[in-house]
Image (tube, rainbow, N blue to C red; front, side, top):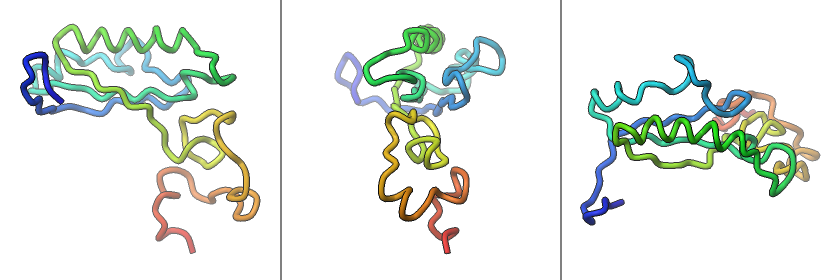
Length: 134
C-alpha cells in the first residue's frame, strides 16, 4: 500500500467489526467514537468490517441504503482526523446456519455438510478449533 506520493505506508491500526444486529455501530459511546483518541495514541488506520447480512439482508442484489449511510457516518468520523480506512467484507463461519455470523440465510448453503454431518455443536469461535471435535 502506498500513499499519493508513492511512499510505502506502514499501518498501525485497529480492527473494528460490528456483528450485532443492525450490523453497524450506534452513534453513541457504545459505538465507534474514539477517532481522536486513536490519533493521539499513534494509530493511523482502522479496518472496518462490513457484513453481508447488513448490506443485503433480504434478497440478492437488494442493498440496504440505511446500512451504507450508517457506515458512512463512521467512515467520516475516522477520515476527519486523517486515519486510513481499510474495508473488510467480514464473516465468521459463513453465517447463522453454521453458528457463525455475517452471511444471511440466502447465502449459506445447507447441503451435504449439514444433512450428513449435522450442524456444528459448538458456538463460534470454538467450532473453528478442530481439537474440540471428537
